[in-house]
Structure formats: structure tokens, C-alpha cells
Image 1 (cartoon, rainbow over the protein chains, first blue to last red):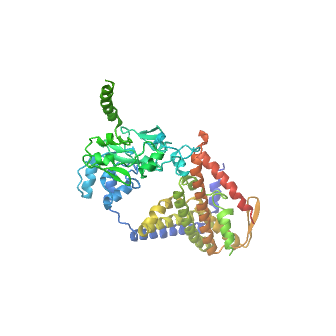
Image 2 (image 1 turned 60 degrees about the horizontal axis):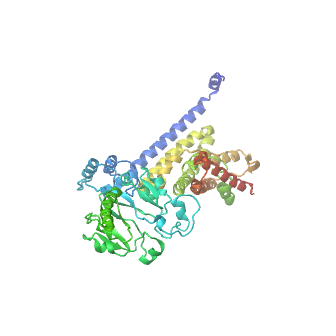
Image 3 (image 1 turned 120 degrees about the vertical axis):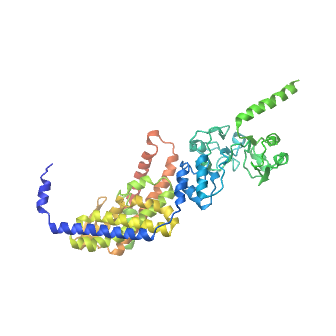
Length: 298
Length: 213
């Protein structure tokens, strides 16, 4: 490369043109700066300073589990009063109390942690409408006539939620998805992924959940699925504390009233009320079943 | 004013992405979901219209008479960037809904090459005609003579439709990508390589448009 190039250019510089160019650039720059200053003065958006303070104290995982677009959206909703702190399961207690102090709301920091459950236990016991061949996820399968299951709210067991779960808490076997309550952190990504909206949150302390979400009548369910709820209402009648009610042929458990007695578990003829924590069940069933067997043998 | 010609050329034959290969970065970057692709496309369209409406007078009435045409890139960048900044602030103030759906894409496209490209395209033709000489553009081996001066209206119109052409291409790619991502392809080809191949086929399909007329 010829370094003399610059020297040659330098000889030919027209100082007037350079001056004009400089003046134009500086002029346009200053004009634009002035416009921006004026517009920013007139168009200042007054943001509540509390939003930023609240956002700094939130967990910042941006998981979207609360139903708001990220933590900033949640912070905004909190300040506006359209959301409650309970909907965030990730923020720790100290931060939650700090946030409640900022917002001036009464909050004792005792939000119930939740976990996710799959409200279907049909799987291979539920009949297929057609044989599905195609991309292997529930989301794609759901595009073809709502999936291969005869039940409209049946888990297809193709594992879209398994892929979505960042904590490897979901597994598919027996034809439907199972969530490990030990690993679940209730982030809500599977809830958003499931095309059938089958995954729901229950309090972590809950003993039982309803593993079916069909709103069909008993007869229709019988013809399609061997594990589905037939809306017989036995659980509603059995429950001593009146925590279970049938709404649209689906039992809804009011966890604030539930006394963890487990009577609905035994009452349900279709076994679609299930234990949230499976470890407990195996111990209980073993202790309960064994004496019966012995008595029968005798 | 050859409105139909401008519309057809801007949308299909001279599509910014698929025929001129400008603005590939947002094209590949923001085409994962059709929703965000639409937002990006509309943001690009808005910025392109503003660009054409502002750079055309600056070029013809300031830069050309003063004989400092060579400064056009720097001046355009300066003007476009600050105008987009102002637009963002105005949107934030008066239409927060539109801002939340469109505003986040505005800073991304401020001085994208597609934006500078449209400014250059609109003004280059002015320069050609003001010097009373017919410029020939070579589009895929065919020499196209541009002898008509672009008026201000035509400049803005072509800016609008170049932007809509961008929107069309990015939404098409977003739709195809959703389909292609579900395909079972060999592992090294998964993801970005398949997107590039998809975009390549789209460009080949759009090549047909340049043969019309």
C-alpha cells in the first residue's frame, strides 16, 4: 500500500467544500439534537418509580408463570394492583415482604408454593380416533383434528411438555405425562406448552388432585376412556368437609377446605382422583392393601 | 406516475430481501414467530416511509445543490437514527399499545442496510435523471432503463411498498420456519442451516417475478 496516498489527497483538499460539509453535518446534528431534546421534554412518560424497585426484587427468571410477559410485566401489574404476589412462585420470602412494603399492601409472606399436575390419566386406557403418523410432538398432533385421542381433553403422551420442562420433571409413560413433584418448580412452561391445557397448578401441600378434565357426561366418557371421570358425584358426597364440587361434570377441589383425609381417593370408582405426591401413596397403599390380602387369604 | 409498476417492482420483482439481499439480518433473526415477524415488518415499513419522506428532500434540495453528495451515507444515518428515536418517544407517549407491539423493533432497524438501501435507491434515481441521463440497472441479466425522475410522491410510495415487500417476505419465512422446525432433518442441518436453505428457495421462487414484464 502506498502511504503517500494521504499526502496526495491533502494537496487537493478544497477548503471551501470541506467547510460546507462540516457546517452541514454540524448543522444537521444540532438540529436533530434540538428536536430530540424538545420531543423528549414534551413526550416524557411518567413511569411509576415503584415498578423498577419491585422488578429488582423479583426473581428475574422471566418464566412467565404468573401469566404476565416477564418479570417487568408482573411488576407493572403488581403496582397497578391487577396481580397478587401469590402468582409468583420463584421470588423468595424476604423479597416478597420487601415488595409488599414498597406497595403498601398487607402481606405476611406465607404464599403457598404450588406444583403442576397433569389433569388426565387416560393415556393408553383412552381410545384413539385414528392412527397418527407425523411429527412426534403433541403440538403438531393437535393440529390434525385435535389429536388422535377420542377424548377431546385427553393427554396424547407425545411429550411436548417433556421438551418444555427445564427441570426434567416430566416423563411420559403409560401413554400420558407424569410430573415429578420433587423436581417441579411450578415455572409454568409446560402449562403454556400443552395444546390441551391439561396441566394445572395445585398447592404443594395438597394431597389429592383430579386427574381428568373432561366435561362430557358419564355415558360418553365410558365409551371412550377407561380412566376418565364419569361425574358420578361420589367424591362430592363422600367429602366430609365439603371441599369437592362438581362443576360442568368435573370435580373441583377447594384446597382451602381440604383436610387431607383421603376419603375421595377411596371413593372414586374410576381412580381418577390421585395423590399429588406418589411416594406417600405407595407407602399407604402397601400398608392398607396388605392386611386385606392377608385377611382374604385366611 | 407508474404506480402499478412501482408497487409490483417493490413487492415482488425487486423485493428487498429476496431479490436485492438487503436486510438479511432482521429477516433471519426475527422470523421465529409470525407475530413478531409481522411486528418487525411493520416497523421496517414505517421506518422506510419516514426515510424516503425525509432523505429525498434533504438529498435533492441540500446535498445536490451544495455539491456534497458524497456525504449522503453519513447524513442519512444521522437523520434516520434521530427521527426513529423521536418516533419511538412519540409512540411511547401517545399510543402505548402500539409501542409495546411495534416499538421494541424500531431501534433494531434504525440504520439497517435495508433502510439505507431504500434511501439510496430513491435518491440514486433522482441523481440519474437530474443529470439528464438514463441510468441502466441490470436486474438478473436484463438491462432495465430508468429514465423517469422519481417525484416525492413516488419516492414515498416506493418506500412504503418496499417495506410491505419486506413484511411479506419475513412473514412467509416465519410461516415456513414453523413448519421446517418440526421436520425430522439430519442434526447438522437442523435450525439455522435449514432456515438459510428455506430462504434460498424463497429467493428462487421470487426470481420468477423479475422475468415478468
